[in-house]
Amino acid sequence: MITNAHIFALYHHKGIMNITTHSLGVAHAYKIVNFKRAVRKLLAAYDEARAALVAEVGIKDEPKFRRDLAALRENKARTPEQDKELAAMEEQDRKLAGLAGQLLAEPVSIEGVKALPYEEWKKLQDENAADNRHPEMLSGTMTVPKRFNEDGSAEFEEVDVELLMEGILWTAPAEETE
Image 1: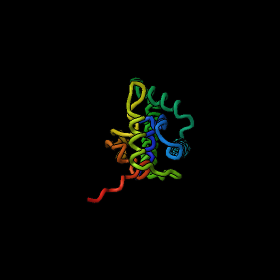
Image 2: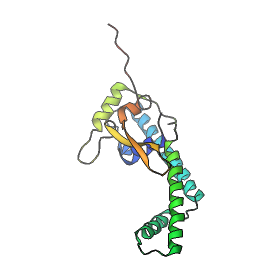
Image 3: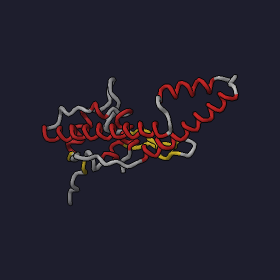
Image 4: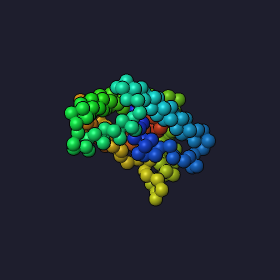
């Protein structure tokens, strides 16, 4: 099962949109184009849903909210009115964290993507191996939230990217019979 958290990590931490397909034939390269299109669509849907959550908890301008919250937390000489404001803002922040955590944990379906045969997947991996400019995009692990707690904190797990992509971007080769 793949979730919004996996898509978010693939995009923001693995740089999945930087995949190149020079070593693949046209038909297989096009499968990667469709994958990138599907990832962008899922990220846009996530961003829209998260913006709705921000509005739902009563935050009009999240960057300003973050700055104001940080300033109130740092102010050690708060007035009673500022203490009330801080408590209200922290409650909004906790509520947003919980809702955003639920959104990240939601399963997603990557539509319109056809998997590569493993031989082509291996070519794609070799072409996109880590170098001085890019991280390892198609193998290795990535850290994703596993569970979100009521207090807004999260527990994380390491996910193997290659195993996550099995059945989505690649299929296993046929077993040879003896």
